[in-house]
Length: 178
Length: 274
Image (cartoon, one colour):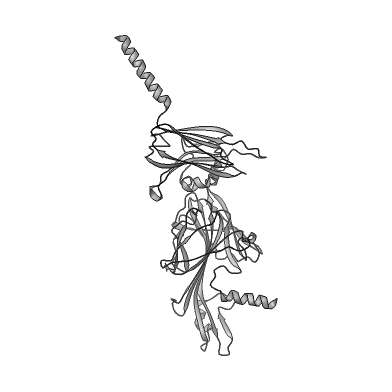
């Protein structure tokens, strides 16, 4: 009897852990910052955000991550956030930096993983609808590029979408978890 | 050759309804969108045949004013008066939109004297003193035209998110009232503005828009628009860049002694987003 309960408990725990590993509802995003062979390379400023497909006042805009040089003197690299022009116009210019869980230092070339959980900041409760994931990268002394991944939320089963830039943004993968 | 030039001048006069002239004044900001805590913006004021190159002359700085986002007047700094441009700096440190402008208005008159000679008031280069107007025009003047003329030149710079407190119209002369904020322009979205003349919709005002860098194009490539019955105009930008917008308006709804009313407006806009 006692043993049985133990086993049951163990099973329950295992089941819970398993569901945890499949991961909670939300988005996993991977962003490739391409390795560029240039004379003077500065790690790029990056903004990751979502926009709903609605227009006007109904439009939802959510900034998920912003990477910038926040240690620079004179108010930091915040001064140059405006160079992420599309994001700046959509959301950045109305925000005050730094933002917990959103802002971070610029990243080296390579693939970077980001995880956002439904119901938790900065994603919050993403309502049912059509969205576009935007990744904008601007590099000092370099170019600027925006890559978009359209998606529908929520999903019934894990879904993977991707897009690739041509210059400043490498492969962007969006995994949607139900 | 001389005939050709005269002919060219004559034909320019004949199609005087264009807004872009051989020489246009412009006020060019170093940038229109600032982030972080802001900093300095620098401006060039010049007259030229192309946008935005320095090739003709520098207007004087006298009338330049700056309205900060909290709707107060602030001072320009580091004025430089060159041969081809007049430059100055403005410290941008309040979140919101700054308006940098010069506006003037007054009466001008032209007539034919009894001897057939043309007369003008105020005399070329002189400042108009309205008190002198009554005595300046001869009693026997023929074909007297008195114009109530207004001129405005402006540009806008925003720190952070755009605001509208500095953009309130004065209801004097030809003015632009934003539907689309002038520091919120994108190629993918048409920009809408309302033009007012003395506070009322300027109906049928002629608008021309020219992208900077005209020196390097085969033609100026101006876009022409006209305001509708509400003074409204919708502008479609071709691509990102710095643009000159000129507007002209004329009617005969003038207050005496003026017989007609004219408004001249120009602004520099930056389209930053596709």
